[in-house]
Amino acid sequence: MSRDEDFIIASVRGLLALDSRGNPTVKAVVRTKGGVGVGIAPSGASKSTKEAVELRDGGKAWGGMGVSQALAGFNTSVAPRLIGLDSRQQAFIDSLLIELDGTPNKSRIGGNVTTALSIAVAKAAADTAGMPLYEYLGGPGAKVLPTPLLNVLNGGVHAGNNLAFQEFIIIPAGARTFSDAMRMAVEVYKSLKSYLSEKYGKGATNVGDEGGYAPPMSMVEEALEALSTAVKAAGYELGKDFLLGMDAASSEFYNAEKKVYVVDGKEYDASSLMDLYVQLIDRYSIAYLEDPFHENDLNHFAELTAKVGNRVLVVGDDLYSTNIKYLAQGIKARATNGALVKVNQVGTLSETLDYVRMARSAGIRPVVSHRSGDSEDSFIADLAVAVGAGVIKTGAPARSERLAKYNRLLEIEAELGPAAIYAGAEPFTGLVA
Image: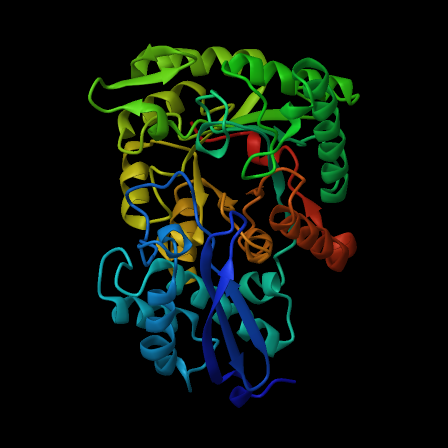
């Protein structure tokens, strides 16, 4: 049994790591007297202006993406302040990081430093306690395995094609267990590969940042038809075994000057884009829609949620940036019934947990998510189970930085045994409008 002194932080070190795009990022290693925790900060391609700031070197080395400045500050100024603290005091340590930074967006220390360090502290405490991370963070009631949202077709800034929307997602909501969900998803993913190869040629099965295929498509319905066909070809029924989802990431194709969205070569104002979404939802069993409007358009988010929120999870990502300040605005406006959760958007685990609690208290579904530039760190798998999110978004069943999360969830399912509960269709039924 661990003693109190075993949880005292004995050493803290920041190291260079590479993310899935080959860009430098920050790895934190925290050692207590009784355990060790390692955290690696991910990085997004489509970022909100509201996110915590990554500290980057600029210049020529690493294409300007170096983190030597961030690591220097980490090891000389931040790390010594944590030595001797109790690793179980997560909120205190995260508050200390916020105080040491002293900016509203982590721009002095760097959100990449605070994210890696905050995650590593939690892992070190869990390891010292001899507990799996999901149980350490979530208690004995943490036993719900999330329904995976698998981004199997990439567009937007995640791919080199002309699809405006960033992610086209399959959701194995009809599975009985998480492992069944992964089997079904892999079968559809392979079915999709065959379809794309036959229709567009073998080059169409090259993958984007999140492991989804990036075929030479330019029309939204073309992508949705491909998913629908793949689901059926794999022997499943759309609307029963599988649901579909989209991350529009609409800030990326919004023309602020003209106040229009450019989709499929056409210009849409917010109202006509909303009509397009409703048509697609009706036709393709779409149950998940993320960032349908640009990151400051609360009113149209709210209007869409009022229209389809009884059957679709309308999710804010750039809208909220895992920040309670922006989430509070969304709650007041009744803008969404779902909120994406990315620790590195806000920069600490404690702030993330506050955000999840606020969302839940307002009847908003938290959706734990990876980033397009991710790593072998499987932290979000444990986080999703710990907070009972019921939904996780972590890419296609390809590329080891995505599979690390799925494989960790398979491990958790095995550890829980008969106690494990698969969320399945539940997160997409009885939604708050």
